[in-house]
Image (cartoon, rainbow, N blue to C red; front, side, top):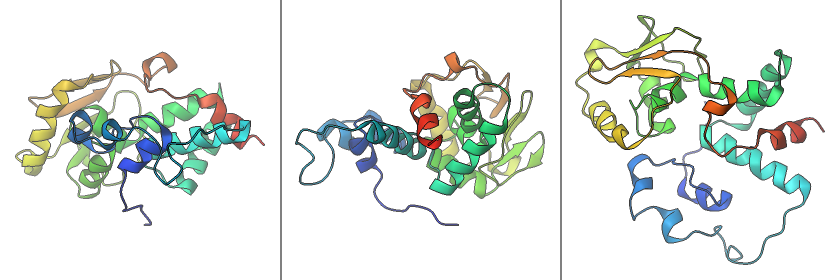
Length: 208
């Protein structure tokens, strides 16, 4: 599968917002956004004025990069949300948050979504007792995520759980750090998603 493998700190600078793509590094003085909080490139420090389309595109790129999806994956998930009942924007955010790699990150078992994606692909996690290695697997209310027994002593996962104490665990997830287990209490409502996202702009972009 295609996957971006270049530098990701430039994404935070490009979107003028911390996307927390590098785990612990984002909380230190080494953070690229903290040291150079302006867009990359020779014109990065100039004045930038976006058109309506430009604002919509930037929001879409920001959210896509935040969750680590390729363009086709992002568009297909949006189309799935558009077919669901209710508001398309809110449905889209629920689907993004319901991905297994996102839940592993939100529960504190990985320092970033990209790290969580690697752990899932390597088969370190179980969903309802069954091994799942598909990062895009969509979880439902009541699903239980756990670290498989053979992986519970993995140094990186233990370090991530310890580091997660500085992050806020969403209320819609029940986490038991001692058991390395998390339960989806319910799918998140719009108010439960605290990331600075304007889903309206994405809906307007894809509705053209």
